[in-house]
Length: 407
Image (cartoon, rainbow, N blue to C red; front, side, top):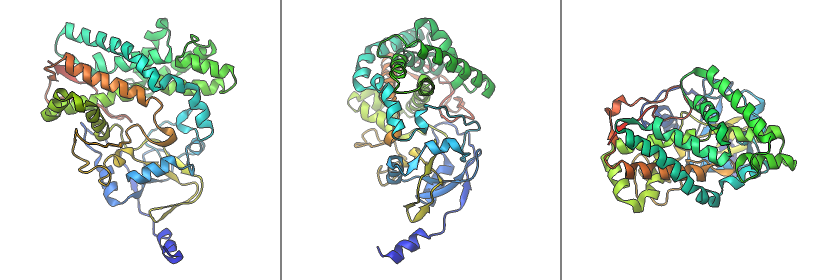
């Protein structure tokens, strides 16, 4: 490529800024506005309902992977300014992995990594199955109909996360109440704020107490603070998102079950072909629109050329994992659910240094939830017409609010 050609490409006029509406979408419908942006080009510009200014949006798989792996795009800078965003409130805490850049990110993540290894999850699996079986036993005993969100999909991750975190038995009822309020769509921002304040005060005291001395998260954090590797404030900021981290599992699995319950061919494939179940779960993770709009922004720390556009130092940049998971160059027929899709390098858990800390735990819970419900409730079906299933509103994480089922 000649210097003249390069200059022409870089000087290409930037795309127009598009206002992204806050949509309340039903079911597993792919966001039509995001679909429009994907058709318009690999790199567009967006303005979200809150914050200030505009941001670049990357939707192609290769660009999303590049940006999320490139140290020229940082998260820490986001905390210092009003970037255009979907969320009305923005109060990142010190210690939050989501806004840490290297080398702080690795320092913080190292403090809790031991609780989320593949080995730790293998040791956890029997206890996880025991918790889940107890919840399903109650559903079977009471008989149909049952709201599987209320009875299984919400309490299972909350209970299991408490095991991983090391929440003492005496405190679990209170911690679970806070968690339910924080992730609920009822009660509004004020109630969620009170619950967050209560939970973070409790987390602070728990970390100061050093935890149980075992290999749970609060013990690991207490030990790391004691060694001076992280501050107490950072430890609290680390623990909070992990404590409520089961929310995504609840709503992801809710979407997966809705798809299985409304598409008989999918239900038959997942139920009757256990040899493809792992691949099927990956395909469902790729397909479901697990969030509204986009996640967290990055800031360009220097000028970067991408797709013939100059992203200037200081520009806000978003990536869309949802769009990347529908990139036709990587996933043939991306809008079709193909239970035999192999390989399936989806980005449902993110990419790069900000890859989901609890991804192995989330995958374990997803496997157990889908597998156990299909095996224990062989005639599982919706107890209401599909168009009467209620969906969450005004929320970042999409999913059914209720899932009334019979069997």
